[in-house]
Length: 467
Ligand code: NAI
Picture 1 (tube, helix red, strand yellow):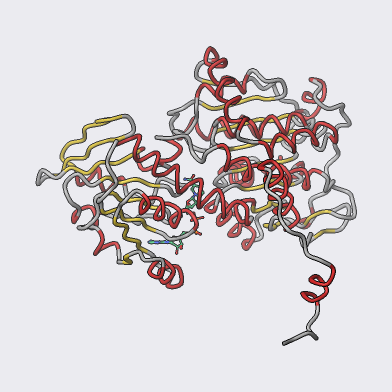
Picture 2: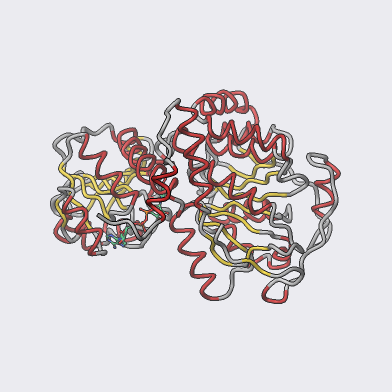
């Protein structure tokens, strides 16, 4: 595993390896002892969910997701035996979905206590939150539709557990930990980040010298980018747009901004449904790739008057700005797949509108412009696949979360005080983890592959053998 490691007792930045409560896994006493860590004793944590009465419905949906997640099932069996998180508090900021619930069950099966806040104010599935709040070893702070203040309060409540490990999706939890709860930093062994935008923020923190512990860029793993971003986001973004609008994509002009793994997946799926797809890019290589794949590539200013459905997937802001909206056709649909709700300039849209018809359909708001044109904004400009649909399908999250579970257990084994501590900073997912996940997935699908013969291995390792 090619990752930086640090020496034993004192971490860079002078932080000392924290003392750790010696506690049996899964016991209430352990939870209380851990809460008495840095920052002093804390009140017992109690879940905050919209409606505990939804727990049974949530459990049923989690059971359905589990059927499509054999890889996580296999990892859970091994965690149950090995207890990699025994006695550890884990704070997570993730979309509260059925698939996330399956990941949570792995951590508690492995002896950890999980404290979960939502990573998006609109993506929380309240039935899942209720079901999770019922599980031993889990506290949940998540309600769909909370305002920004409550969103951050929930992150603080998850951090109140004084976590040894963190799981983030967008870097809001890690950011809050560093900026507002620095007293907890010495207790954190490390964590993993789920999405591209979060990893980009972490890399900026690391470059600043601010990041105080190791974070594994789970998003950057081959598994994640190939399966989650391309197949999972590609399909579920289309699903979200269809559920919110019931529009026919065949024959429509669909503009996809950004041709990364997410954007290319969306573009392919839209083309598969018969749409004429235009791609906008700022990276020449990716633009060339889109062109070679047969997509029309245009600047957004030229695409704006042509498009009927717009989807942003860039990780940047104001990709669809006022001047683009001014040029759009009546009835144009605007959706975002990027992590934050800044890719479509929603404020500019509100400024342009003379009237807003909220929820002309669930998750679709109609903005009427002065000249009578109407623009339809989906999911308030937030991740459309998670707000208007259910995010990536369970079969995809099986692989993506498998990477995260194994990365987390790798971090958990990297105990402060050992010779082999990972350095603070952003770490790639070890290639062994990607290979292990793919091997488990193939086994669960009953797919067999060839193995290299001794002669082939020798040939591939040698530079002496040519033609
Ligand atoms: P990426 O960074 O690999 O690709 C983004 C592409 O957008 C790049 O090729 C970049 O050159 C391009 N781009 C940047 N600014 C642009 C602009 N102004 N106009 C046109 N193109 C522009 O990222 P990836 O993995 O494709 O993810 C994209 C976004 O989606 C990120 O914010 C990521 O966090 C998010 N994401 C969302 C998921 C979901 O379920 N909705 C799942 C996974 C990632």
